[in-house]
Length: 411
Image 1 (tube, rainbow, N blue to C red):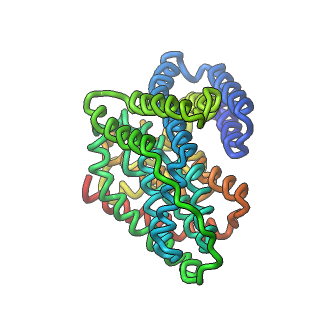
Image 2: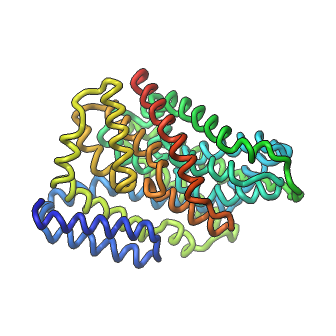
Image 3: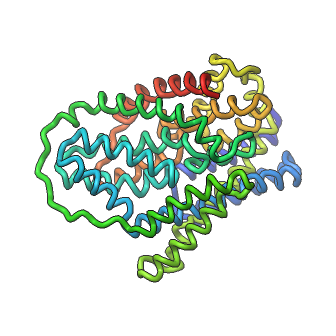
């Protein structure tokens, strides 16, 4: 390893430590800029490489900032709270129906609004709904966590990993969903059964005292905008329209609507977009691009198989899982997916199984895991490290193998 190769390695470690610490936006952006500039100073990347990286990441980052605004306005309008209240009411105070409803709701929110909306915005209202119904909050909270990663398989917009992979796939938005739908169906069954077994005592416990709460109405316009946005993604994909144009239009409509109702001001919308994190993601892309052209990219290339049979797909998914939990799934996607392009769509989709499902194996697998933990601590329900790994180590491998098996049959 050349001495210059150590600089992007140190830069990546600094970025990962910052992501785990989750400091203020200014610190996050500052560390990202320093890491990117230090990497560029090595000369490992040419300016053409940098332009390609920014051009590839640009649409993904724009989607990220716009979908975060959409999710924030939906939360302010009470969409998540209203949905969770209906799940609570439908369950009638019974733990199993409430858990089933929360599980499906978390999967739907992840698919439509991305995994960050599930861990940051939905989890608090799920915990509150469990408390008000007198049932344990643990099964629902873990359903949100597991679905944030595993249910992000369905649509390209469900996870940034999928969006980063799309330029390397010969699939439209709808084509991606068609291939991944049966995979997700099996994953949902595995995850649901696994959580039912692991939390059977919580789900069998008699309900505690409940608190009568009025069920809030569903905010119609935010719900309609989200549904139209999903239709727009599907219609726009064959026409070459990037998802950020659709999510951007949805964000604009919702911000104007929310301003008229006094739900937010322009500074609130800017904060909801998390521009510092957008800069952080761009910086991460530059650092990982430098690593991919060096020793790490060579090592991964040597390990990758040259076929797409079941054993090869499983190896790709396991490698993606290992890289996701070492580097976070976002970094691993930037490194791994371009190296798989020559093997075709099935190989890249197998990698996404590891990058999405496999990232649920440890807290370091995805930033969503860390955000979930931080949110649970803030809510006064800190999860134990032992319980987290009891769930992740028992459910993740089974879910991953089942997903690869289905993918090998349908792709």
